[in-house]
Image (cartoon, rainbow, N blue to C red; front, side, top):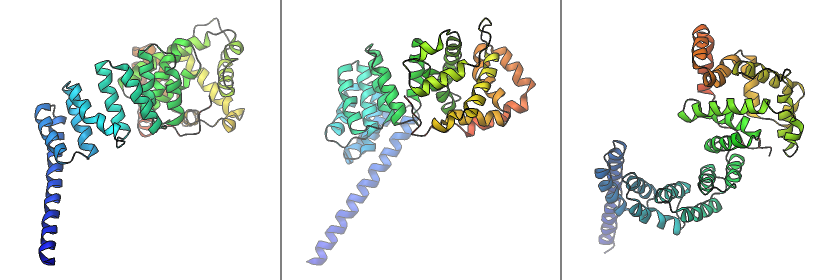
Amino acid sequence: MKKIILLLLLACSFHVTSMGQDANRLHELGKNYMIEGDYVNAESLLYEAYQKDTANLVFAKDLTLCLYFQKELKKALKIIVPKIENGTADDQCFQIAGNIYRALKQYDQMEQLYKLGLKKFPDDGALYNEMGELMAIKKNESCITFWEKGIEKDPAYPRNYFNACRYYAESGDISGLWYGEMYVTMDPFSTRSSEMKEILLRSYKNFFAIRDIENHLKDKSKFEQKVGMVLHGQIRDTSEPLTAQSLIMFRAGFILDWFAEKSSEKYPHQLFDRLRFMLREGMFEAYNQWLFVSAENLTAFQTWTQLHQEEYERFLAFIKKNSSPFPKGQYYK
């Protein structure tokens, strides 16, 4: 009798294992079809895999994404929402469901979803960014609060810097100067970075056009006041219009003064450390040409790279290897 029971258990175990392997194989094939853009075949295989193992969160997410790509939005919600409701969802589930609600323009449901997600994942930068973008859609000024919180809690996630810089470019807040540059150094070769370079150049020109800098900074944090005063102190002749080329000189002066005054000891910041390193290693000119001159005058930038090819290639090699995220503990709001 014991032998029969053992054989039955082994057979059952083999059947379960085979089902698991079968489901994984179906899922793998379905993902390959989805990558190729064949969503019809992908859906069929992903759905079959999901039916074999409905508890598998990866299966559920991929099936939901496949349905989302086909704009089968209500069907997609039926797969992902139960995972959120039963407490098994990860942070990606909240992001996926949020994108579906956004496509459906169901903004109230989207807001409730993100509130629940942030309660469960209070350090998730992507959820703070999505909540901020939702508030922006709703014309709610609290959007910047979420982007700032995302930068504080999850400094390795870049999109909060991007959105915060765009927001501050409109209001003239000094924080946009380093948020924009932090984004570009984390995501140096994207389309968004090209947009950010233009925003940064415009923001710097607006900043140096301020006459009463002390009054402009009076309600800011000690860190923002210190950066603003040291940076604004670089400009001597306010009658001359600021150009990308002159900005390079002002920024070099800022880095020299910032470290000479030992401000770096009170406010350690990876961005400023990186700028000082490039200044010491002879890459500062190339970096700022890439960052600002390319946004102001592409022809001038291209001419410069042709005349300084070795210097520029050395900088490119550096930025490719040093697009690392920023650490926690350097948020000074």
